[in-house]
Amino acid sequence: MFEILLTLRDEAGDADAILSRMGSLGTKTPPIASFYRSLKRASDDSLLDVLDPMGEGAPGRPRQRYAITRAGRHALRAEAVRLRRLSELALSPKRPESGQ
Image (tube, rainbow, N blue to C red; front, top):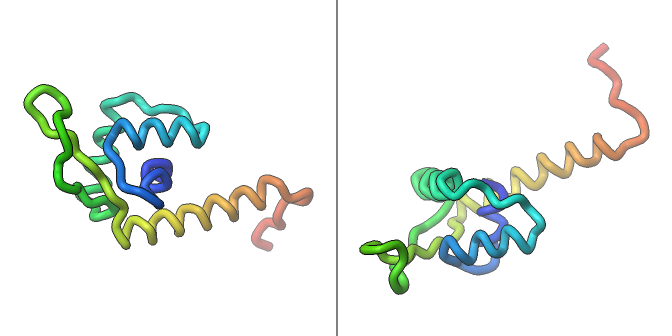
């Protein structure tokens, strides 16, 4: 989900654009069914807006475009902060003390 939100941070896009941007980020391309489930879940959770259809997509279905919402931007930032903290722990020379 993080990668999808990240690809839409600066510009809306359709599924093909999102997958292409994910490739440019160096992330693994998810299985297509999982990818579309993630788009649906993000939309259902109000992290993405589905914009007006553009052109023809799958046979008989319009091509959907997606844009990140304010809630999506908040979720993206929160996950980025969480990942930064974990990265700092992983890269630090000393392991944190246990809770004593």
